[in-house]
Length: 412
Image 1 (cartoon, one colour):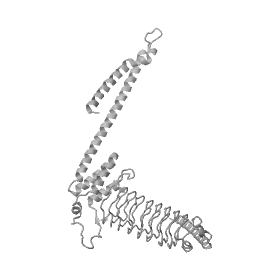
Image 2 (cartoon, rainbow, N blue to C red; image 1 turned 45 degrees about the vertical axis):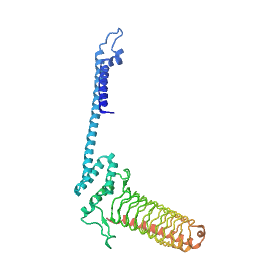
Image 3 (cartoon, helix red, strand yellow; image 1 turned 60 degrees about the vertical axis):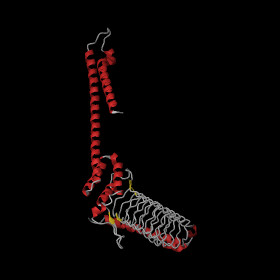
Image 4 (cartoon, rainbow, N blue to C red; image 1 turned 180 degrees about the vertical axis):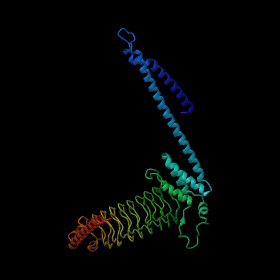
C-alpha cells in the first residue's frame, strides 16, 4: 500500500473511531441501562443520573485505555523502525570498511558485522553470506600487504611450507565460526575455495560448505570441522591430526595419504571410499558408516569403531591391534590376515566375515555376546578364549571399583 493511501485510511479510521466514541458516550448508557433508570410511570428515577454518569465514565475509561494501548503500540513500532534504521546504517558502514585498503579498517568492519549479527537475529544469514564472500574473494595483493612477503616461491623446498591466512581473512573465518547458534544459521558457503598448503591449525570451520575445496597439503591440526561438507574436496597431504570431523560429509573424497591420527570422525559417512595409507591411529569412528570401504594398508591401531558399520569392508592384512569394535557391524567384512591382537569385539557382529581364522580370534577379546561365524562356535579354544576375556573383564571392573572406592575414602 502506498504511503498516501495508508494516510487516507488512517484519517478515515480516526474519524470513524471518534464518531463511534461519541455515539457510545451519548446513547450507549440509554441502550444498555434504559429500562433501569425509569420508574413504572416512565419518569426518570432518582438514581438515573448516577447510573448514566457511571456508564459514561466507564466508556471514557475504555476509550482512554484503547488510546493508551494504541500509543504504546505506535511507540514500539517507532522504536523498532528506529532500531532497524540504526542497524541498516551500521551494516552499510561495516560493508564500506570491508572494502577499505587499510587492514585495521577491514578488521573493524568484520567485527562490526559480528556485533550486528549478535544484535539482529534476522540478519544472521545475510552477514554469513557477506563474510563467506569476503573469505572466498580476498583482494589479489591482500595477503602480500598483510604478511609483507612477495608471494609463494616456486623454488625447490618452498612448496611444502604452509602459508598463513591473511589477518582479515582469518578474522572473518573466526567470526563465521563463532556465530550464534551455528546449527540454526545457514551453512557458510566456501565451496571450491583454494586453501592448498594453508595453515588452518585450530580453525573454527563448523557447518561450513567446503564442497570441492582444495585443501591439499593444508595444516588442519585441531581444526573444528563438525557438520561441515567436504564432498569432493581435495585433501591429498592434508594434516587433520586431532581435528574434529563429527558429522562431516566426506563423500567422493580421496583420503589416501591424509593424516587423520586421533581425529574425531564420529558419525561420518565414508561408504565405499578407498582409505589406503590413511593414518587413523587412535581415531574416533563411533557410529561411522564404512560399508564396503577399502581399508587395506590403512593405519588403524587403537582406533574406536564402536557402533560403526563395516559390512563388506576390506580389512585384509590390516594391523587392528587394540582396535575397538564394540557393537560394530562386520558382517561380510574381509578380515584375511588381519591382526586382531587385543581387538575388542564385545557385541560385534562377525557373521559371514571372510578370511577369518581361529588363530585370529584367539588373539582378540571375545565375549559371550560376540556374534562369530557358526564354524567357530564349537571350537574348544574359542570357548576358552571367551572365558579368559570374561574373567579378565570382571577383574578389571573389580579393580576399577576398588580404586574408585579407595579414592573416595582418601583423607582430604
